[in-house]
Length: 160
Length: 296
Image (cartoon, rainbow over all chains, first blue to last red; front, side):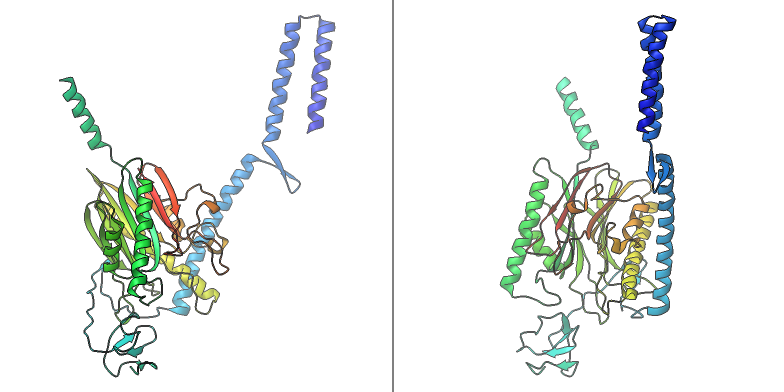
């Protein structure tokens, strides 16, 4: 590329000198001709600038953009396919962990009554299902609910 | 006569030009105890409340220093409605009220301590919450919503969400894919509600904002196949972190070998432009940072 520009520049100078000496035209005309050649050269250069060598192959920006767009579309398609596969996988293998959350659903909104915890003197942890009594430091401190004297497993510290 | 005319014109312009709205989202990490499914001592919880209120009030003051703005805050991992009221009172932001608090329950009907909420200074037209409903999988929690009156002929539909985490019990690829599927299904449900709202408020200008902990992002290779956030982009939502570098949008600083991540987003639709955006450090209250976005 650089060799091409250099040779074209030399050619321009030679042509300009020849025109000035042989044709004996004015210096303004010579400058004008040089200007025209320069414009042509810049066009060649800008075209060259828009291209790039990728893995030894010359590609233009337009081609890269088209390739980028194609990859984007392909990526979207793959993402959709992934989504479908995930849905299928979960439906086939996992299924729903619980048939229902026990929460009434009305359209997109739900109305859930706030549960009241009566003071039964026993408290059962939601996660571990361990029962505590009011003497225990975990009583009403862990997330859970009021329960009966025989619900869950008794706490090892307080006896439940 | 001329003075009256000028005054009238100023009033007319003031009525027509709507102010900015400051949106904030913060996952407050099992607020106020900071511990999963466990209460702390009263003193400890009170201290956390004070610190959280200071962070919220500081962010509001910083963002509204130059000019006032209406405020909408999305909060996640709140224990209950009482904690939300306490936080709003302690923050002392003028006009800020609780618009919606969820009451998600576990399978045995006991309320979870990871509720989502919306606080705002705008008038609330409708609010509530819903659990994620999906026929294939059981998705934890749900979303809180509020339809806000943002001036003449304008409504802002707000959604506070906390999507499924990346926690996988046996750390298998199936569990990972299941988590992604749960988030995608939740996003699809929100977008369905947004579509319904769009049909209902067709004549009015409806702006939509979804804020919260998405537990995913559109940068990391880990989530390259995930469509959760991208589905919002497909529905013409824009991200509060648009055009920012990865290092400029860390909302969940890395800990225990996990790298820095962007999990907390505010996605919006129908606004003119971003006026400002900033991330405030959430420590020591939470492992997530507070994200603010001022929109016009």
